[in-house]
Image (cartoon, rainbow, N blue to C red; front, top):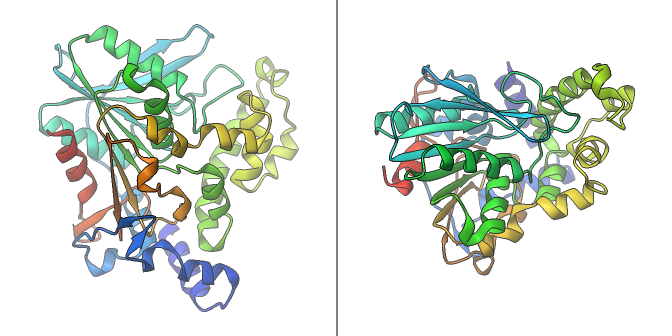
Length: 357
């Protein structure tokens, strides 16, 4: 139903000579070079050339089932981070740490596909769950956001303590990719990650928030905001947390956009002055020139969550950063073949190739 809704909306929008549809027509997908980067072309089947098929189909197909082991890290602030491990019973020589996207988890199909790929190559993997994303709300009023690198560092220090000799790779998707870019730029040579891949990251948060307010991209925003509303309402209903949350439950229910939610909820709960302060300090783009470990960034030109603003100019990248921009791929999609019921994904192939396993 979700896919049908988006495709129906797209068909309607294409027939409207509105400002929104003109923007869509001028979108990244019709260009051959953007910000100094030539578009790469996958061998994409005709049925997968639509940006919304690329984005939605991978999320509604169940990922592979695997026996994950849950570990909880208790934090000094009284909260916790949950990790889900695969194949780390012995002393692994190599570990891939996965940082999922907004409202994702180890159950997300893109996460499962990567973990399966790692397992097939004898590589251990672990999912870092952002606070409240492991199936249980976190204990504090605060939660997670696009620039939360402190929790990343806590997880990586924990893993390094358990396996001091292991090679650590990191893969960040969407929100997790933006945070990973920020982490790598902040840490520079002190990074606990040896090699990284960043996928479909909203490297300019303000531009991406505004993008989701226009045309049929609002459907994605509506679904994600609904999930954030639910978690916030549950916390506001907890007497132990209510007094530490400067929020009004009725007002929160009426927040319809990421921009408003981040201004009224995310920013105040995480110590930012307002949404502008949050977006300015946490957008990953400004950190890319300081990345000191080999890092691959992948974007698709037809990503319905993005605009050209997320695409860095070559001079904004450090020598360690490789940037790849694909004509098709949607948001964390990158379907390159197969059939709608059994698609083949280029994404995991490229990640494994770059990480050399």
